[in-house]
Amino acid sequence: MFKTLDLFSGCGGLTYGLEMTTQFKCVGAIDHWKPAADTFSHNHKTAALCSSVSEQSVDAILNKNGNIDVVVGGPPCQGFSTSGKRALDDPRNGLVKSYFNAVAQIQPRAFLMENVVGFTSFQRGKLFSEVLEIAHALGYSTFAGIVLASLYGVPQRRKRFILVGLKAGVFEFDASKNNSNKLLCTDQRVGDGVELWSFEAATSDLPLSTSQAYLTSPQNAFQEWVRHAPQGELKDHIAPQHNASLVRLMQYIPQGKSAMDAELRTQIPQDLLPKSAFPNSYARLVASEPSPTITRNFTVPSSARCIHPFADRALTLREGARLQSFPDHYEFVGSYGDKRLMIGNAVPPLLAYALGNNLAKALSV
Image 1 (cartoon, rainbow, N blue to C red):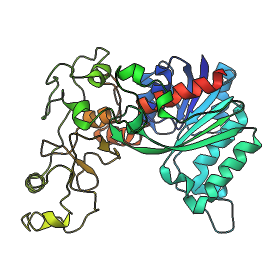
Image 2 (image 1 turned 90 degrees about the vertical axis):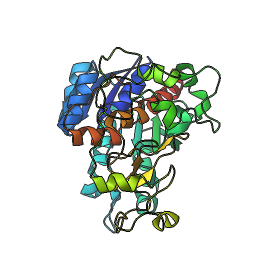
Image 3 (image 1 turned 90 degrees about the horizontal axis):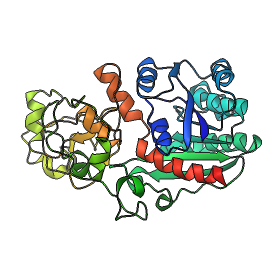
Image 4 (image 1 turned 45 degrees about the horizontal axis):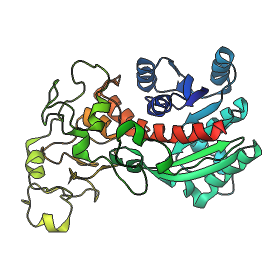
């Protein structure tokens, strides 16, 4: 079993997915935001250290656990670079630098970094080039790719940049080779353009209104999996409270459409129309498709594409967690806003599970 350290761990989606493979054991996690660290600690056998990622905090974990096989994590990145200077010397990119300082300090067999799709294009690729330069200087072969979570068993079309570094071996991104299908289905392959789970498939057992009870028994393999552990009452399934005008506006928006669409703006009463908004806001999801990316604003129709396909409301926290592929027994700690932020920022556990299977194969060669 490979020992992992999760840096900028958030609420723990990446570690949860890796440990599902049974090939990885998290021996340490670090996140400076207390609600996320508390959530990680509440759901994992290993507690997260609420701290910045530094030589001292990493040393504390190394002194307790010895060598680390794999460093993982998603350092927040703004992608800035002062003209004429290295991108990683800009303080606004300091967390990415801290991540690779930790890799240099630990010298693990492998690292896995998750980030936004734009990571490769920040400063016309300057930041990405510097990261590769550092990794190669430390003795790692690098494997970079953009993954679409819906091809790895997640009911969400979430694209993410993944960078894997290996001291030895080859990492494959091919979704059809990660054995996700053994977890969630028996008659379809994950990958090759196959999206297994739609919004409706992921959530049809949840009531349309606030409730602590399920609407039905599990209707498919995904629902059986997210409900596999006893969790008692249904947690965080609370319908957002919208004002009457917004509820009326949502009644005019069909699935897959936005109140900002030109054809709808002639049909919606003028007193209900938003004066301005992003093109993908005030939009209703399509039940028969995976959801679009779950963002930190997935309960706010004015800021995200998040209106429920059948109910005139935005998503509940539990629906957002389902679309991120968190099991229902996973509990989020903090305020409503804290929970929404950590769910929206998380690595989907089923994506982490798939990547973990491929990483374990690379390390086992």
